[in-house]
Length: 74
Image 1 (cartoon, one colour):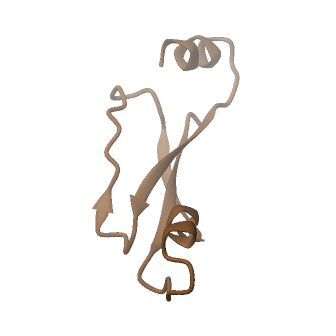
Image 2 (cartoon, helix red, strand yellow):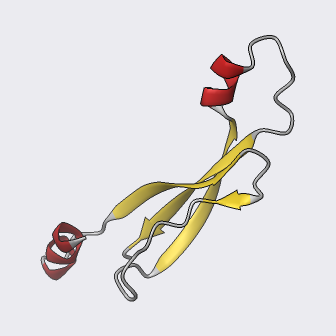
């Protein structure tokens, strides 16, 4: 996170993509982020889980929707 702080100090906009939820969206991947480092957070639906696609070959993946967290410094 120190590198992100240094980038912000130089005036750069930074976007960090982190897994936000897994499977049905009921489990949030809670990665600790220092308060004030990012200005906002956006959830992006990325569709069905690629991992489950390999693990559950031939089965329905309707319940395995995942989203990513985008943390933005602007």
